[in-house]
Image 1 (cartoon, rainbow, N blue to C red):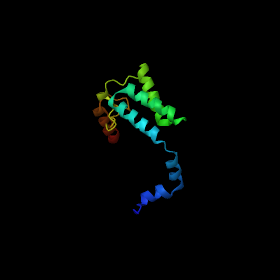
Image 2: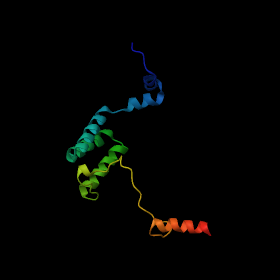
Image 3: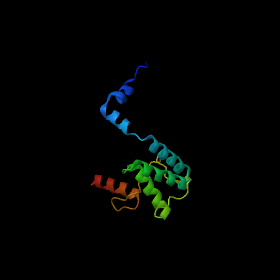
Image 4: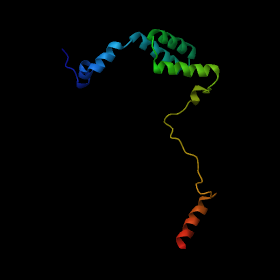
Length: 121
């Protein structure tokens, strides 16, 4: 018999993980992953079809599935236009905050001069 790693032991011996594993629905997961693949490829009609099958299979409210269905419904109705797929949001892009003029000065030079004048008094 193969010796279990520490991580495998957790999944075999911990009550919570055993209960979760007993409730897994592999058929649901198969349809969901297929729908997600279609969604990423841009075939939203096929993705929506797979997600609706998932909804029938699960029989209860599933957060990630409901989110995907709501998102696609908004796009279908035109309430949220994402634009071309290649122009999607870049999650790795660091946002750049807008320039803010806290003191009502137009030029940063004026601000530095004002600071040096205060020091001279």
